[in-house]
Length: 152
Image (cartoon, rainbow, N blue to C red; front, side):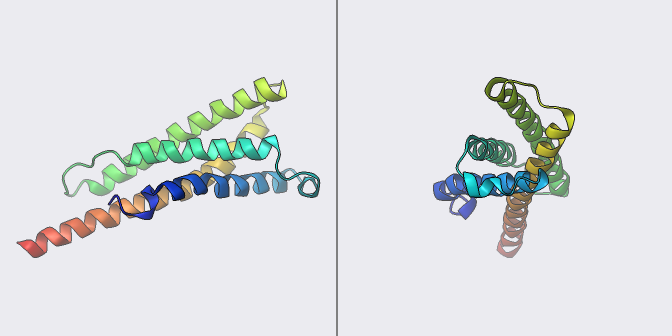
């Protein structure tokens, strides 16, 4: 399981950069500021998106990578429960990070629409990461069950 590409350092370093860039582009598209790309692509907002994606990824990874219970009928429910907990915890951390960025860096509190847009974008990207982690864990668990059946 440790040799799977999700746990390699290069993947863990490059994923937030790619997902953060995608989040930044989506944010510019939602706000109709695509012309800002020609002026300056590497800006504080892009670095912020990278940091938030790293925060979301590591939260998902830590919650979903804990030791799993013995194989059995409850694995699907346990996986779904962990995905929901990771999603809620990740969105809570993202909302705190967004609020802190707006409050301390930009100097004003974000309004509800800005916060909902950012949570929607980062929540959608978080779901993609969680589905990747969850599907890998589910396939690993089902493969272990098949190997145990073959040994018996």
